[in-house]
Image 1: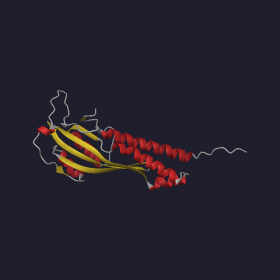
Image 2: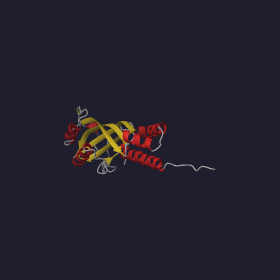
Image 3: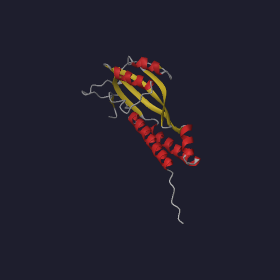
Image 4: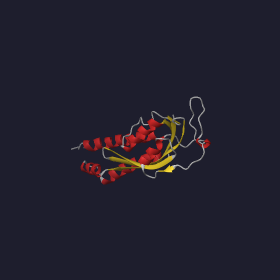
Length: 197
């Protein structure tokens, strides 16, 4: 008597959901990734090509907010030179993504702030609850570790990616306050003029 292959539907559904979550994380990071490197002169072209180079402004030491995002928001309110290293964590269906980025306000032109960011680290892992669910649904420990490793490797390509934009001060402040509340969107840079667009 021939046995039929048994497919564990919950495992397939869980694998499918894991794939969707990784894709969502990749889409989020791609929307934030920006250009491959800074423009040599840190210029952002305006419609009439009269953009001012940050290098033309008298050099001033930026405020080092270290990891204090409130300090960075206060500095951004006046487009003051400032920098902060800030980490974010996102948990979607038990797939946890954490990243740390360098954010800078690099000066202003008229009423617009020059904004820069660089992704410095990204990590993807499965929550203990998701691991328990996967094991309970028949996924082996080895399969689970492979899936977690593949998900983590897929986001490593975003480390070092940069974005340079010019925002109206009020739009930048809204964005930063949303990020502080852990409100992220693929539309975050819609109000900005960015070099990669």
